[in-house]
Structure formats: structure tokens, C-alpha cells
Length: 149
Length: 85
Image (cartoon, rainbow over all chains, first blue to last red; front, side, top):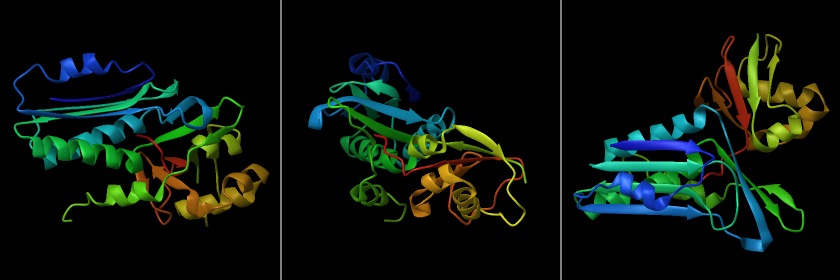
């Protein structure tokens, strides 16, 4: 079962995990991304596209489901304003064995950072505001997953 | 050619609008040429598109390169490299 969503509501990791895994999966792997409070950050704002952000997440989830044998896959990204410590993104993958679940989670979080229409804007306690720049390492990690490599 | 363009993140802020309808001249046929035309059109365009290599694009929902043809009557999204996750 594939579940994908994007929205401004807080992500309840425990509730999402319960919905994802009713028991019986041999292996469940997860990634929880949270807002870092570095340098006095007071708010992280995630801008998204009203249609294409969800479409991009759904396409990634379908790619993962085709590449690995997964019993369940959950991919949830929060958008809008959030505070340090809050959850931005949740990836859950379950399979019969750990290898496929772990690989699918790593694939999804790596490709999410380069393929999906989302942009981070940081606001700091001293009033500074700025858009986050993509890191060179993000592309290197994402490109490891090109088919045939 | 009539097009709808939507802007995101700092491209949107520098353009001052989230979307607009434009009618570039006939010799503007690709996404890269559209970015160059917007950059030369006015001051806000010059600010937003000063570094065309930093601009990414989607045409009718698909990520495309600078040489992609513009869709007649379609939608083009212009934005910086994405930073989700």
C-alpha cells in the first residue's frame, strides 16, 4: 500500500507509523527529517507547487515501488512554516527483508532533495531571512540511484 | 505565443508576482530563450534571471532543460534548484 501526502499539518510520526504498519511486515525502515535550530533559526518555511509537488512525490514513490519489493510505503512532506525540532519529512518502507526497505528509504530521501518542487526559506532570530541553496553533495547522492549503476 | 508562467521561491520574490500571462515574440521558442527574454524585458526580470544557469523549469508539469520547446497556450514554471527533504 502506497501512501503519499503533502500539506501544512504537523506530522504525527507515531500515528503515521501505526497506519503504515499494522504488523506482519518482516522489516520496516524509516527516515524522519526535522528542522535544525542551527545559527538561531526561528522558522523554516517550505514553499511548494500546488499540483506538481504532490505529483513529484507520487512519481518517486511509484519508482521505488517498482524497483524494490515493498509491502508498504509512506512518504509525507510538510509545507508552510515550522519551528526547530518539528518534522519536515517522513519516509517509511516495509518489506519482507531489511535490504529492500533500507534501500527504498535511502533512495526516496536522496531523490526527494533533487527531484521534487520544494524550496526552503530560513528566518533567524536576529531578523535575517534567506532561501537555502542546493548542496553539491545532494546531486551526488541522488545520482547514485540512476538505473544501471 | 501566449503562455502562462508561474514563479517560485526567490524567482517569485524578485519578479514580484506568483504568475503572469505573457506573449513573447515568435523567435522565443525554447525555455532558455524565454528566460533570456524575461531577463532583458525589465528590471525585475534582470534581477530574477541574472544567472540563467541557476534557473530550473517545468513545462506542463514535467521538469525540462533549457532547450525544451515552449508549449503553445501551456504553462511554464520557473524556479531555483529545489531544496526539499
